[in-house]
Image (cartoon, rainbow over all chains, first blue to last red; front, top):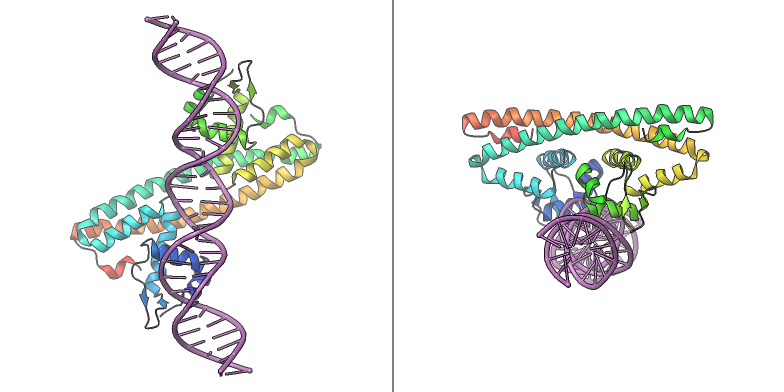
Length: 130
Length: 130
DNA sequence: ACTTGACCTAGAGTATGCTCTAAGTCTTAA
DNA sequence: TTAAGACTTAGAGCATACTCTAGGTCAAGT
């Protein structure tokens, strides 16, 4: 029920540098420090890190994530903004999924093309850029 | 059957700066220049730009894309490497899709949570980081 | 003739997100 | 008591991918 920065780094795959950087940028405003000045991460802080990863991976920059956290701290007067942000993010993810599917199709085509080419020992160049 | 850099910028959404940067980095080795020294993009060059976008969007850095282009230029002796690269890329895309689905689930949960919170006028905080 | 606008090169500058260094503190085990 | 190892801060440095600037060329329209 309390983790050091090193333990969190191992758990999350982030470096201790990155964790401190996130805190400096205001992304982890709930972390406590003990009497010796050491950070003590709670399970809730791990939850915040998961959310940060989710928003980052879906295309929000750290600034946007900080905006969300600032809204969260501000309290119930920002509920609508936060809802809108997640709705916006959902649209982005849907677009990303569609894009990714298109890219997958292209890659599958290339795999077919090159599988045949490896068999033949040669690639017929006019097919490459089709 | 021949586009200026400005036309290509409009078509692709990339800036003319970016297009010149890509060429400088060796990503567009097939572009011709006319007698006045102006770039003339062919349809095949547009095809290359599409491929670059596909590889970039699926997580390959420009260096990795350049590697592929260098293999392409090298010819049939690199067919296997190119096939392997696309297979590797396919694995990445599959991972990305799975990740994106997880993120989507989290975002959908947040949308439910905040939709209710907006109705209630308040967010019950213990739910936020669950 | 001359202005406008699109192009050119070389190279500097910028945004983002880390990543590392220096100098120091604190705890623990030999 | 001392050395190791994990932590601290402040701030510098770095990689990637642009993005822009300066100074110049060239073609077309008025």
